[in-house]
Image (spheres, rainbow, N blue to C red):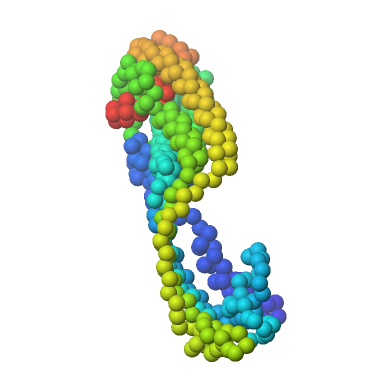
Length: 480
C-alpha cells in the first residue's frame, strides 16, 4: 500500500514538473557566455559593458528616446481618417437642440405627423485629411526637445559606462593584487619548507639543536596560514570582479602578472578649463540635462502661439428616407437594406482653420517660468559636480605623486632585504648565527616583497583614479 502511494506521488510530481517546466524556463535569466580564460582587462571591460543589467537599462532608455523622436515627427504629418458606418435606426425626430454625448444622433428627418416606431437603414462613408501646416515654431521646438532628450540619454549611457569601467578596472587591479599576494606567500612557504628540510636533516645528524627544528616547523605553519589568508582575500576579490562582470557564479582566471613587470607612465594630467569639462562624461551628462531643460522651456513658450490647420474631407451618405413626401407631408420611408445602404449623396469640403487658445498664454507662460527654475537647478548641479571633480582630480594627482615615489623607493628596500636574507642564510648555514636572526631576515624579505607588489599596484590604481577624475581611461588602457 505504501509503495503504491509512493508511485502515485511520483507520478504527480512528474506531472507537476512537466506543467511547470515552460513557466520555469520562461523565468530563467538569459544565458551568459563563458568568460575568456585568461581574462585581460580590456576583455573584462567589454564583458561588463555587454552583460551588466544597469548598462543594458541605459541602452534601452536611449533607444526609447530615439523612438520618441520618430513618434513626435509623426504627430506633425497629415492625419488621414477613414470612416464607414451602417445603421438601422428609428426615424423619430423632434425639433430642438440637445447636448451630444450619451444620447446618439438620430437617423431620419422631422415628420409632419407624430412620431412612430418605424426604422430604416442608413450608411455613411467619409475620408478626412487634416494637417497642421503652420505651427509657428511649435514643431521645431518639439523636434529640438526630442533631440535633446536623445542627447541626454546618450550622455547618461556614456556616464554610466565610464563609471562602471572605472569600477571594473579597480576590481581587476584588486584581484591582481590578491593573486600576487598568493604567489608571494607561496614563495615564502617554499622558503620555509626548504629551510625546514635542511634544519631537520641537521637536527637528525646532531649538527643543529632540536629547538631549531621546532622553530622551523612553527614558521612553516605560519607560512601556510598566510597562504590560506591570501587565498581567501584573492577569492573575495575575484568574486567581486565576477559580480561586476554580471557573472558572479563563474570562476575568473586573470590574464597574468604583467602589471608587476613595469611601472605605469604618469601623465602631467588632463587639460584644464572648458576642455577638461567638455571631455568628462559626468559633466557632459549634467550639461545635456541643462540643454534638455532649455529645450523644454522653448517648447512651453511655443505652445503660446496659434496653429493653422488645413482640412479636406469627402463623404457620401445613403438613407431609406426618400426625398419625396406623401399627401400628408411625411417623408416616404423604405425600411429595406437595399434602399438605405447605397450612397445617394456625395459631398466634399476644403479649408483652413486658425486656432489660438488664449488661455494657453497663461498656462504655458507659468509652465515656462517653472521650467526656467528647473534649468537654474540643473546649472547649480553642474557647478557642484564640476567642483567635486576638480577636488577629486587634485587629490588624484597627489595620490599619483605619492604612489610613484613609493614605487620608485620600494626596489631599494627589496634589494636590501634580499641581501640581508642571503647573508643571514649563509651565516646560519656556516653556524655563525642562530635561527632567530634568519627568521627575522625571512620576515623582512617577505614584507619587502609584499611592499614592492603593493607599491606597484597602488601606482596603477592611482593612475586609474586620476583617469576616473579627469574623465578618460586612455592613460591607463593605452599602456596595456
